[in-house]
Amino acid sequence: MDNRRSFLKKSLAAGSFLGLGFGTAVTAEEFNSRIATLPQAMGSTVMGLRVEPIKQVRVGVIGLGMRGQGHVRLQDALFPKAKIVAICDIRESKVNEALASLKETNKQKPTTYSGQEDSWKELVERDDLDLVLVITPWLLHAPMAKYAMEQGKHVAVEVPLVTNLEDTWDLINTAEQTRKNCMMLENVCYGDEELWLLNMAQQGVFGELTYGEAAYNHDLRELFMQDKYY
Image 1 (cartoon, rainbow, N blue to C red):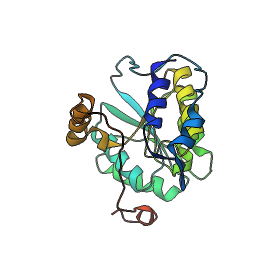
Image 2 (image 1 turned 60 degrees about the vertical axis):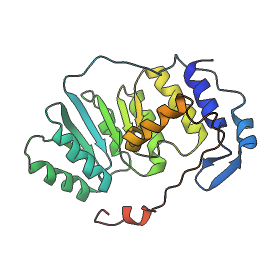
Image 3 (image 1 turned 90 degrees about the vertical axis):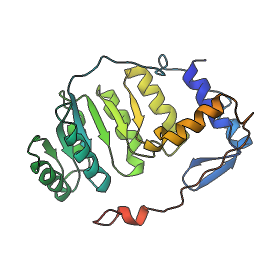
Image 4 (image 1 turned 30 degrees about the horizontal axis):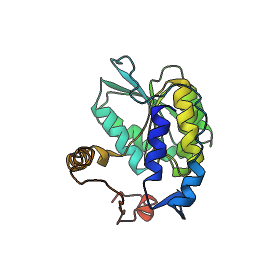
């Protein structure tokens, strides 16, 4: 059993209640029965995967809503280390909004895609991209990330990366087979306090941890559908 699968199994089994998808909660016993037999590995583990440094990362952005517009500005600020090669949103108005923000710095002129549900595939299939950012509605994250890796791209995806266990294994298998990085963009994981407490837990400061609880106390779903960000 490789390290990634063993780690995932142990991590998933640690909680008292675990969600198999939005709106579905099951006991640890019920959940453990589903992960008792791990799927056969499709390739070698990608834990600790390293790739050769890329002098200028060529980026494609899928999804130009409120979060997506922010990502475009961040990538633009990284120029010339990051070059925005292509952007996509089914809504042409959002593509134009992103282009307008890029004109303020006048450093990048990406190719645009919009208008069709599968326009994003044209972006992903380009041969001049290193990294694809997926900032679309939740249920599209897993299939878009998988397709991007299959097309030879590294992927960074807004939260949540997946909404069910099956998609989790599917992305692990795809990453192992393609040898591409797939990262969920949850920045709080790298905060000082979070890393500090993680290190304390790993060093045994709290003894054996048997229970954990967390909550997201501000519901942003309504705000995501508005024109102005919170």
